[in-house]
Image (cartoon, rainbow, N blue to C red; front, side, top):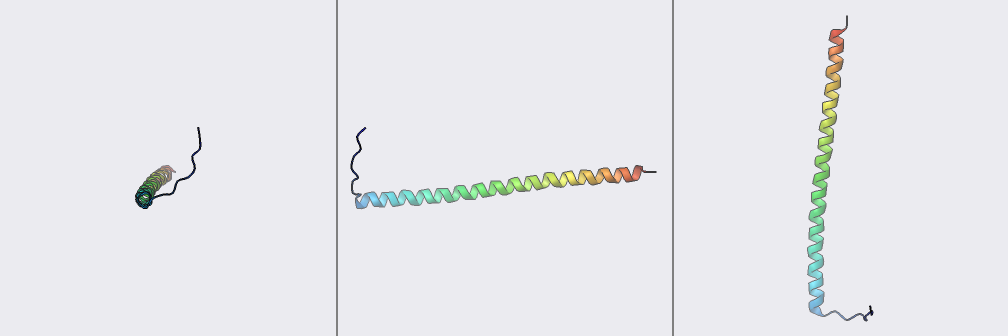
Length: 69
């Protein structure tokens, strides 16, 4: 495959390139926002699981105390 020399960009090429870069930037920002929301939701889910585990342990301790002579 032969390598061609670089060509000068026209004003229209530059405009199209800038528009494409702006669109890509917007899409990446939206993706970043979505990923942050998903990460936060996962953290909340993990926190809820931990809370349930803690309450289960507390309930077991209370039962053992009530059953103690």
